[in-house]
View 1 (cartoon, rainbow, N blue to C red):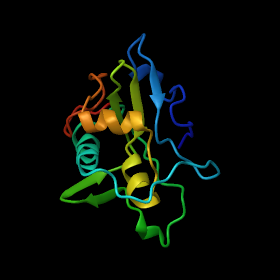
View 2 (view 1 turned 180 degrees about the vertical axis):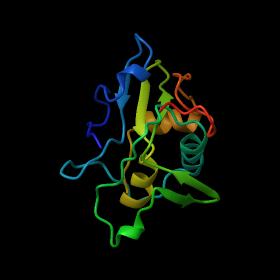
View 3 (view 1 turned 60 degrees about the vertical axis):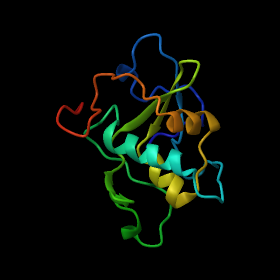
Amino acid sequence: MTYFPDLSPYDYLPDTVPAGVEVLAVGWLDPGHDFPTAADDPDPVFWRNLITLAADHFAAATRGVHGCRFGHLIEADYQYNAVYGTRVLFLGHAEIRVVTPDGRWLSAPTLVVHYIRDHGYRPPAEFVEAVTAMRVAPDDGGHRDGGAGARI
């Protein structure tokens, strides 16, 4: 997967972003690049909303799948289909896009869910706030409802 520092300009799939929208990257992690961590579990409202976004409101779905490149005890520790509470999520194929109060979009790979839970990643406060508020970026023509119609 492509690495972007948190809150740097996003340009991974520019055709999926409307003209004039400023998009910043969040959670595009890769080995060899440090990232902030947190010892505490994420806020329960943020976590519930993040799971909902990854399951039901993902955007910019692709044909390919990116897996986690960080070490795991055994390969089976990380699965593309992962259970989070009562939800089974397919990760690594799309993005979560939310909007800050000033209108900028924040785009994270769906793997951000795994990075937070399994690697202790702490996303920027702007992302936490936008996810907690459930300010989902407007539909960009990509898949958003967990059913047919995914951008491929």
